[in-house]
Image (cartoon, rainbow, N blue to C red; front, side, top):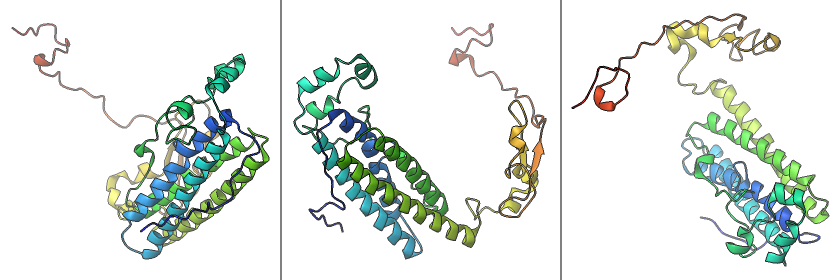
Length: 279
């Protein structure tokens, strides 16, 4: 059960309207790594979570918080659009650089949402359910969550430096702080799960089950010019799970055969067999 409260999680206010910034903020609302994505990702992981209740509870806690963040950003966009009009868009387009980069303010804010936030990114591309990861494997999902929070916080930090509006910046600072804490949460959960089951996903398919392919798990193949990639713990030393030692292969050679596929039937009209004529 969800219950909406009228108060926002944190205060949202702007010093002055800025339709151009409203368009940019759309990215952290409805973009690939925006608040809509993490909201849906955590909630679907929580809805489908089986097993230890503490992980489900954690997912639902953070996912529900992200619903509040979506509402905060909608409020921020609405305030940035206060008083916007078609004339504002025409005015913005007078600056050639602005017109080239931004194409003026987002016309959908005028035509579609009536000066409100949209489930789209900064270019008006609709939010997509394929952005979310909910695999049913807790470690795989938690790593995806850390990635999502890392990318989302990065984008908010970039937005922070694109405005001098102290009211907007105050909202961004709250979001940056919460995104930092969420990274701490996912890192803690990842560490706990790795300690329980190991660092490789899925733990239920152990290295020894790979049988004759064991060596392929520890070789670093140098497949680009130069050998600078040899200088790192990914190329030398022990694997994180202690099951083997890394080997740097400076000049790898193919281990497989040259494919020799059969020519398909002439009814596919592939023209690979010049003699084949269908009547």
